[in-house]
Each structure stands twice: as C-alpha cells, then as structure tokens.
Image (cartoon, rainbow, N blue to C red; front, side):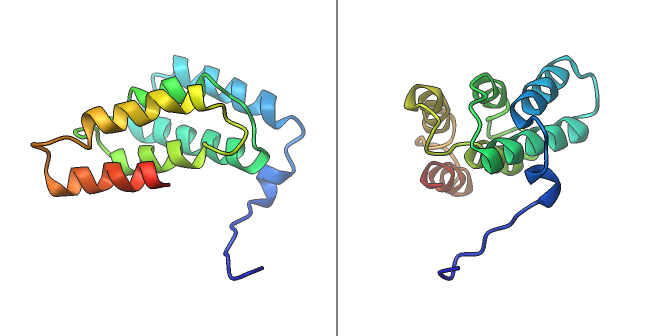
Amino acid sequence: EGGVAVVRFAALQLLNDPQGFAEKLLAQLRKSTDKFEVKLLMISLISRVIATHELLVLNYYPFVQKYMQPHQMKVTNILASAAQAVHSLVPPDAVEPLIKTLANHFIVDGRQDEVIAIGLNTVRE
C-alpha cells in the first residue's frame, strides 16, 4: 500500500477490550517482580496494543520514562517501545516529559556519539 510496509498482529487486532487489556497489563507490570527481560516484553506488548488501537494510556509514558537512561540495559528496545506508543491522539503534554528526558540524558555534550545518535533518532521517530 503506497510502498509503506505495515506490520499487523492479528491477535492484537482481535482483542475484545484493548483499553482494559493495556491498563490491566500496565498495572500488573507496575507490581511485577519478574526479571527485567519479562518486564521488557510487557513494555513492548503494551506499546504495540497502544499503537495498534491508538489508545490513550497516559500513565504508560511516565512509567517507561524511568527506564530511559543511557546506561539502562536494552535501552534501544525501551526507546523503540516508547516511540511506538506515541500516535496522533496522544496529547503533547504526555509526550513532552519523554522528549525532555531524551534531551537531558542522551542529547547532551560529553555523551558518546552513539548515545547522542540514539537520542536524536528516537526524537525523530
């Protein structure tokens, strides 16, 4: 379709109550004592549900923001999930703290070129 590849996940599109599912999964994630890899999978799933259904789960963004640190393990996956969950219906006030965190922790003098590039690419997305 117009040269743009769109990845669709049939199971996500068939969710009966995607808003409720995303909110319950986020609540479970907040209480989770699972390994970081499991939490990362949950973050990714929530972002895909938000993106697929263009949901407003405003407390997702501050939650994922705390993992947006250059030294964080798998930070590129976290940044990709954060970017994926932002769509045209998300109010700018919800996204602004994410952008500020990127600017303050990634796009600053003294950081390695790779860290700055990651921050700039995430803001661009």
